[in-house]
Image (cartoon, rainbow, N blue to C red; front, side, top):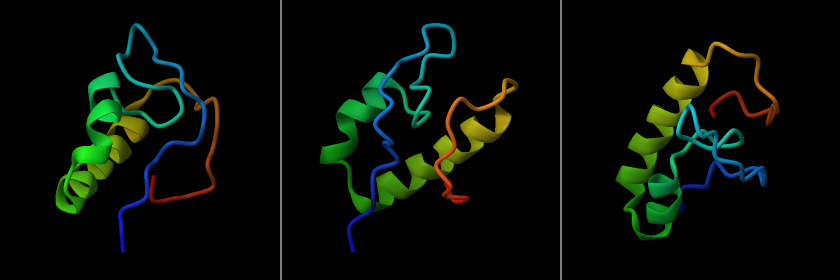
Length: 68
């Protein structure tokens, strides 16, 4: 089963944080997603989860997915 993208359709890169306010990936990570192995995608999703949890401001959008 392919690893699902964390994209939620809110594609705005925060110039200060350096990542998307919707999926918490950097522009480079977003661009590389399609060419990544499933293992790399899973590792990136863990990085994204940690990034989201370490954000000090309140999230602008919630996905309802506790794993993201």
